[in-house]
Length: 450
Image (cartoon, rainbow, N blue to C red; front, side, top):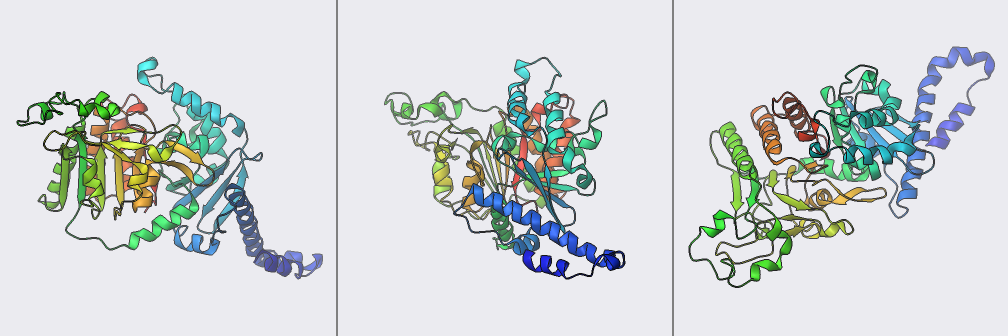
């Protein structure tokens, strides 16, 4: 296609007629620029993953770049010449990133200064975010103004950045720069090929009698009063058999005080919006266990919410896991770990999975395919979107954020992307949490934006 267009350009008349054909040649030049950018991006993708088949760019444009309001930012760092590719409806070009060598250090600094318990009050690490905005967003500012949805494709250090919290580059010179979330919905996608797969899932048929499955607030150890108050416990659960200690990590975890209230609030909102609890599945305490997932009981629900503890393996992402109930209904110790490789084998039909846990969006980066962890496990299982966290989130604040999120989702009928954005803006006005973005900006949406 590129060769044919170049041939057409060479066959055009000489200098004497250039002025008269400027208008007719402009669309051709624009098309040539798009194809040059496509070739450069495909070359980058080939270097990342040589065994992957080339992308069908016509299909990409037709299936996922079909909305005038969407701007896709595809970042490539660490390859000598760092670029961002801008993709959209009739848009395909690249920009060189200046100062990108500093990105890794700035991201590390941001996360190091993030925890409010380790820094003075109201000293959120805004300087690092401003510097990142200058490097990553300022080169594309002219296109941001005309779009309302930003889709970020990035890996490495960039996968740890809350892009919605970056200052809008047009406001960097102001005393209080405006965060991108105030004017744009922001979503992340692991790769273009993954995005295309997720988009195709939007046409799946689902049972109309199922609405949401809420799983959370599991029983982790023997000190939990929901276990100790039960009659007829086995000797192991009551402490006599010692078997409960074989899953050491779960025994060290404590119940999250707000997780139970979070699940109750979600069930109430969903029920009130429909006038009944029909189609709502709830599992907490001892019922929030691993077998619930492996048995297929929640496979057909369009929304799956999980609230509790997660653990991200630092070396082997397939062993990252959610920690679920450590005892069965009789009080006998059971395996509480739902690992990524088990999640990937599930057969979910969920449009949306919400992973309400600390660092649920973290993992290891694989070149060309983004971060591999819990999120990718659920995508492999069939999910189309996931709400995940980038850092250790606050229990009480997360309960309030999720309450706002599900009100927007069920009562206002908003998409997951807009529901989270509006929930975070509401938290920014909250008298208890609004003073510090740590309490509400850690969650993001990954997957298909629609």
